[in-house]
Image (tube, chains in turn blue, cyan):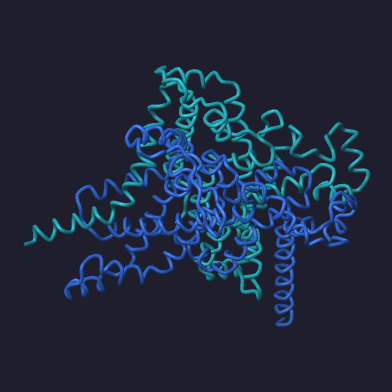
Length: 319
Length: 306
């Protein structure tokens, strides 16, 4: 009787592993296909169609594909090196900005009393439901027209001229100061988030007030309380928001697509898109390019995994 | 004394809020109002805007393309229940003490994390009719009588996938399954399942319930709040979705078969410079999202078991 129960448990365990393994294979197969295509010589990409196993395991590997992608895109405003740089720059600035402004606003909503607070918070909540397309159109018009408007207000500056930065004996295109094809357009509108404010406010509300009351009696100001009590106690929530914002911005596509035209200003997703336009049938190079875009995210994900899992639950369950 | 502390707290409150509030006003609140106003104008960005009253909206109601793209959007949303059910079943299988479960979780979660231009490009290659992975598997693994039989029946087989009007939408739906089934929803379900008391299952076992009965009598009702949340969010996302993958993989084609409402807004606003018309579509979309949310919250109270 006991043996039978044991056997049953073992059988169930094996079945679970089989199901999990099968699903895992389904998830990984596309990535394996991407990897195998990315290292194939051009001639092998279209061979071995009838045998998926052969198609998945390259007969010859050509790791040079990756450096070829890097080299061939250099003529496109600097190519992958520049797109990486742009992506990192924009993602870091947006993440810093969003986490800082959200944390400050969340503190105000969670702890400070001021007239109109609850109504404002409700307004924040309500806007989270609005489709991005609604705000995207006026924001695009703003970026499109802002140089004209600023020229009227401050004619001594040439707002329309693209700028350049000289570094290490070379000149790099740096786009306009504001408006289309500017770092301003890429970073600033993305720096304020109702979602981040909401999530952090929920977290701050769950922190017991005792510590703050003790600090107030000791004569601590509100800013000191915020930086020395609230922020350190909220590390998990802040870490989660940081990772989410960074990843979200790394993938950001719609907004950069409409405000960018110059290759040198593009972020990775946009760069990959123009690369696709040029090499539409060279699948080994296209897959190598995709790998180059995805790889940093896989690393960030594996390193920060536990923040993801806890963060998802934080965002949904407390909301 | 009390007056001044309260006054000071109020000032501090506004100061803490200010940076975020300014950005919120400039890039969210004002644009929302601006696009509402814009929806009553015709504007190509070059000539001065012209007030047209409700004309954008009446034209939209008669716009056959719009209704076709609305149909496409809803069609693609048919994947939502399947995706959610998949996530739940996956979570049920994973909700046990097994060695290496974290490795599986990581594998399942990966597609939803990296989803974007990179994976859309990858799936374009997977769906390549002549050299892609899917058709390679179909050609070698399906028995010949099946492949030949389907072709004889007049089915487009093996499918041309993204370049076929029939298969383009199912192709995108299958990709969405791969993308989201192991993602956020599964993690939420896992958390919900861990909150279900094991005693319930033990009691059911004593009563002789089989796995199927246990699932419908215990698991399904116990996770219904999560199902409700996930379903609402997916509906909201689905109504607004479909632009990115279609832009990268099909350009909305073939013959508009993968153009969704969000793609149509993009075309009017940023490809054809019809700012007013685009704003009108965006507001209609907003209204639809609002209606779905409202209906869900109304309905939610009745179907959830806490």
